[in-house]
Amino acid sequence: DIIKKYIFDTRVVVIEGGTDRNETIMNGIRYVENEFGLNDDDIIVTHDAVRPFITHRIIEENIDMALEFGSVDTVIPAVDTIVESTNHDFITDIPVRGNMYQGQTPQSFNMKIIQKHYNNLTDDEKQILTDACKICLLAGEKVKLVNGGISNIKITTPYDLKVANAIVQERINS
Image 1 (cartoon, rainbow, N blue to C red):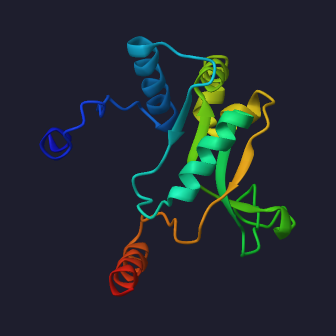
Image 2 (image 1 turned 180 degrees about the vertical axis):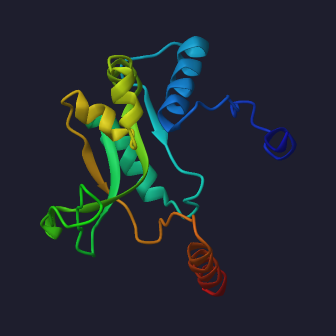
Image 3 (image 1 turned 90 degrees about the vertical axis):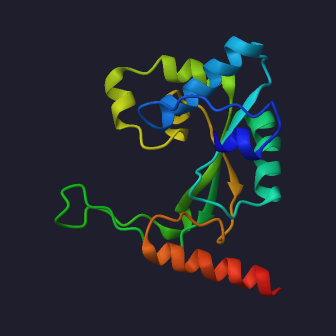
């Protein structure tokens, strides 16, 4: 109803989400496939609504790199040391920070490729997915990195909301 009230572009369509992020992506691809068919170079750009400070540069680079490489993840270099604990009690590994990145969105994919790889996953593999790029990694696909931005924050906590409000105030005052 909100889309119908405020956005008058008939190309904007709301479809039903899935039971998780990846099923929602697949619902979007199925919609495009059923309504328009899928071409070999069609891509999907997925983004979290809780990341409102996306930039045109990040979107454009996602599109360009997805067209060239098929799978893209937006990332920023990790600034903190990452500590792994497989037993949740003691450190089991400390990866080299210079090789670590923090994932952001958008994530962008060739529609036919990600759909094929997702459909080839077992139910157990689908259950452990926390990220759409993992679908491609499990299939042996390379995923191209696109530089994100430190302001492309995810707003999930009250602290994040305070940071977001500070970003908005800074932009208003600039």
